[in-house]
Image (spheres, rainbow, N blue to C red):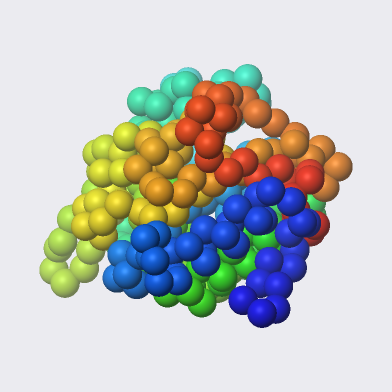
Length: 291
């Protein structure tokens, strides 16, 4: 690490803690971690890419819901389609408080199509859709400092996994392009699948547990057979994953000028960070550049 591997990070305790930890686990000594055990897991929404004013995958799904209502107007009287048709921002802004309706809508949106057809729809979305306020393609709203952190860890023998509460198969389509993370290292919530006549089809079901809260450590262990050495998140749903890691990193969104300032849904995580001495990263103070 002769040259600064975290050029988009401002000098401070967060940057120093990250660099010190990487030195500790890669140098001979009591803290050394063998390369085979160097697993790092990162949440995606709000940790690796921007999640405001709405989740990127929500934009993708909402477009599909509108098409479904146009094809079947009766859906406009049931949730979650009703909220979208009526422009009920209060309902839509608290999607995670309506998990049964959300899972129903997500399951119905793309059920009955092949995995290849779904990937084609996602690729088309990313090729044309733009962030509603930043007015750039969604592929350009990843956090530059976090991409540098991923590169630093990979250069030091870590295997990086995305562990997203969002859709595994949605993120896989662009993970290699925007993060350099192979699609097989994307862990996330997913629809159930069915094999028929040489093809894999998406069904209306959702794999349980979803990849949020206590589901994250479950999915990580199922995929890797290991606990993460380093884990990064930004919200309360990331707490169980951070609790299983030796080094916990929590992104705090406090920069209203360059991005968005919000702590709703992260209050418990921020309190836990103080108790467990996780490294809290301030977007405002620690990121020299954001995107």
